[in-house]
Length: 370
Image (cartoon, rainbow, N blue to C red; front, side, top):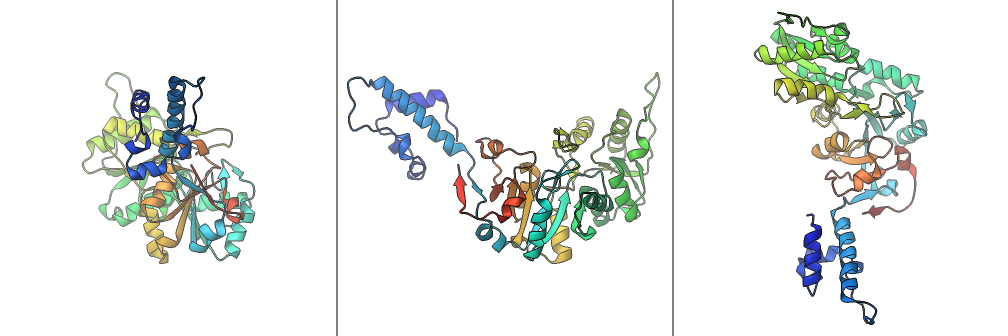
């Protein structure tokens, strides 16, 4: 609940007992410092001054009530490690930024393995296949088994496999990079587009038109650093003109980490272009969709209540965890700041937050930050 300045001023000036105006529950949430009751008011303190002081204190108290209440992880052994068997880590902003490994990550992962924890690495970035991400882990000096790596490019292929797309005899049109192509090759689903349409331009002269393959049964939109008007036009024609053609998005991330110097427009911008010209909502296969966690839980017989999702994004990583019955930890090493996490506008609250996953092995007492 939020309160206007006009309401606050009127309320405090006209109400003799501020706390009594709240319900008992709300009253208990307002600190005693919010209500000023001086034992003695000297002549120099006017009623107006008291009213202004009350208003300032009340504003502060209401702001505190509206802020998200999240536990800072400062006692990881008791509050996290003892109750978690499996950690699912996002990659961008958690393990690395761009092509730079975050300090301390190798040591922390080694400690988790030594403690008997299972780990999986799940990324919404579809530019690489699982094999491609294995090479990236290797290049950063991280010895991660390929079976622990899951990407949204794999999720797109898994979705087509689950829906028996191959049996339809159709092919997929790809806006995206090689990761999606490689994953579709592994399940023998034919595709067109992708890197092959880099640099293409449609005929936009008089009478110009773009011919499309009428055997396309799905358009998959993943992050594409070479997205162009040709690809957008091809995709919208497939979705708008071919009956039953499905619109699939690997993810809706607003921004991504192409480099460690700044944030870059994410796949949400590519998906948004296709939504805008088709009026259709996509089937999302990456986080926060349950597809990947259901796949992991079913294939590996995992207990979701003892899995913790660790990520840097509230709207994908944390929602992925909370919507699927997982414990959640938000790290501040990526796109989400502490200010945003604790702001009154934020409605997504993880179980804990930490500066980086290195804090999983910092010992002290947990506290609630409001």
